[in-house]
Each structure stands twice: as structure tokens, then as C-alpha cells.
Length: 342
Image 1 (cartoon, rainbow, N blue to C red):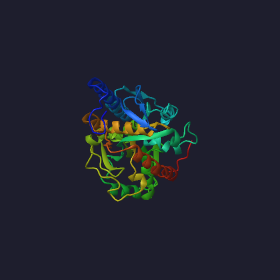
Image 2 (image 1 turned 90 degrees about the vertical axis):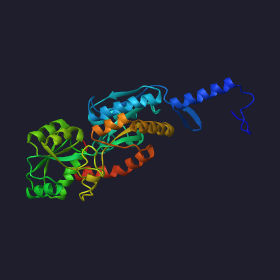
Image 3 (image 1 turned 180 degrees about the horizontal axis):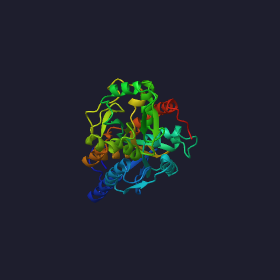
Image 4 (image 1 turned 45 degrees about the horizontal axis):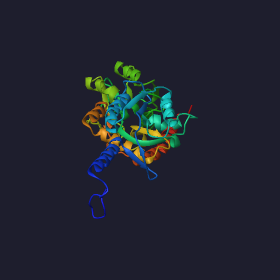
């Protein structure tokens, strides 16, 4: 403590000053957050990150990479809790009903945290009130592929082929209402191809049929498709989103090729959300610490290996704004594709 003259307060000796400095350092390390003018220690216990998918998948792998760094930075363990099933509802509901103190988070996808609101007639939680966006860790664009036996090598060639074979083609996605379904339903519509959608229960069976030739057109993640693209069994045609993907930089986006419809330009993402009512200062701190983790070589490499695009400049405020902006877009896309809530 200093007087107005800038010199140490005479009533404090050197030992007391050292103790105060140590306390301030400890507060910085453990992450003091400030709310309503009072300081609240965060974290005071392990931070649990609930993942809505089984262990071993891309989301789980990235969650564990982020959690390893986050735990080191916060000075408390950061633990992954896998709760697969019910299209992500179980994981989101657990976070929605947790204490609003920032110690329980979910790392989910556009589907689990956004479009699910329009896929189900009734959710056990209100996503707009019971979840608070913290930070997105990456964009998750998907890639349109064809079996290499199909003559089409570019998007214009594929569209011409689909139009010439109206009503005869099928395309696969990893589920009804998925971004893949919505993107290819839009492609079918703009080409007047009247293609038939085959909704698979996940990517694995879809990829198996694509590689085997039972399915000629499909769309999915780089993580599932890249090895078959590299082997020449599948041909990458175009990515959703507006940014080329580092894992396949030679493949253009739909937008680059002149297709600006929302189904092609919006990009899926993986993001972190906390319980509704979590103090803004805690959400800000979590966002900053996760961004810091993403900037490390290890975590950045994991994101790239999964075929995603790292997002290191997000914030709770930007995330919230995009969440609100994208809600009506996903709602309209689902309606246009004829997806009825169950």
C-alpha cells in the first residue's frame, strides 16, 4: 500500500507487504472474478465439462485437449464427463440444471445447443435462458463428397449431373435435421434435382456406404472422410462455411463458387456453454482461459487434425450475438427441408 506521495505506507513492514503481494498473486492464479463489486473466488473446485457424445469422437478429443490446458491454467482439475444420447439433450439438461457458478460446462455443437430447439416439440430446458454462451473453440465446416466412380469432379459438374438425372439420385447425411441434410436438401432444390435423402444414424455407416459404392453422394466431417479422400475412393467437391479448411486447402467453399444461400454459408461450430445465471465475470474469465488454451501448439494441432478451423478470437459477447442471429436461420432451414419437430 502506498501513500499519496507514492511511498510505502509507514504502518506496514516489509514482511506484511510481501504477504499482500503473495495473496494478490494467488488470487490472479486461481482466477478471481468480480461481480457486483465483490470478489468471488473462481474456481473453488474442479470444473466439469459435459460432452454430449461418447469418448473417442472429435468433440471428446478436443474437449480433453482443452481441459488439460484449462486445468493447468485455472489451478483446478478440469474433467470431461461424457453423456451421449438423446441428441445431446442429456448433456445440455445437466448443465442447465447445475449451479450457476461456472463449474459445470458443456462442450457441444451447433445441433446440440442451437438447432435442437426446433427439432423437438418440448425440451427439458429453455436453451435461451438456461444456457449461457461462453466461447466457441472452432468452426466445424462439412464437406460434400462423391464416390470417385461418379463422373462429376466439380460442383458445377455435379449440379449438372443431378439435374440431368432428376429424381434418380440419393444423397446421404448423418441424420435428419443435420447441417449436412439441410445443405444437400438446398442443393437439390436449387438444381431442381429432386434427390432423395437417406438419413444415417451417424457418420460411420454413411461413410461405409460411400466407400462401398452403395451411396454416391454424401456430406460429413473431415475427420471421418479425409482418409478416403486421400486414398482416392472419395472426391471432395465443396465445403460449407466461408473459410477454406486447412486440412484440405485446395477444396473451395460453396460460397466461393457463387452459392450464397444460408445452408451453404453458415458454419457449424463447437462451443462451450455454462449454466444460465453464471456471473458475466466468470463467463468472461472462462472464455479468456479457453482462448489461451486454444493458442497453445498442442491444442491448436488437435483442432487442425480433426479437420476444424481454430477460432481464437471469440468471446461470450460475440458468441451470444451470433447465437441470436443464427437462431432464425436454422429454424427456417429446417422448415424449408420439411423437418417436423418430434
